Length: 212
Image (cartoon, rainbow, N blue to C red; front, top):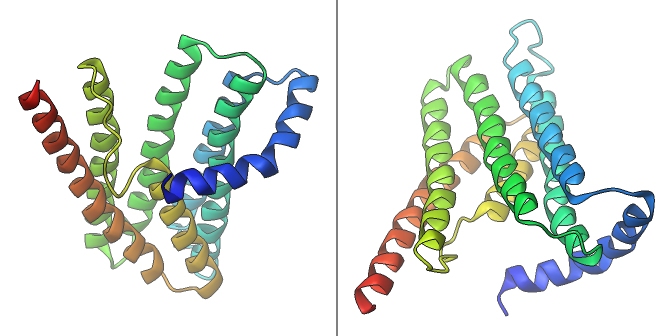
């Protein structure tokens, strides 16, 4: 069992009572997935508003609030799957809806950070964030393509949970300290490790197919 499994196990202990209440209230996994997506859209809005030059003293604060929303929305990504299993509401469409909104959520949240950087003297950081976005999407795409080839491809250092946590924590710290370099550092980390993970997965699939 790796560190993600341990962490997931303890988080489930915390959220399972909440999920049982949600089941009684009639919440569905698709509805919870949609709530998480809306949270990411709002977070992206905070990042974009932070680029407003008329709010110079509130820019990093807005980034921090955006990060907090990302972290909160990330909980919905764990709740929907657990809700589906405990409530016996698993479906093929639910899996498709979850994967689709996950991709949209990541695109919108990183797009918001790109917009922020393009309006600052750290223009290059916007390019780095775009590379982080490309790597993030390719990590998910390669896994989906591999599954189409009957390959279980989950290898790599920077999968979606890690990307969400890095983005959220770095932007929250930026909001608390007023130091944008925390967010820049997070984007550099994701840009490097996500793209390494993408090619790592390509290499893994190549070896699996070669053995076959």
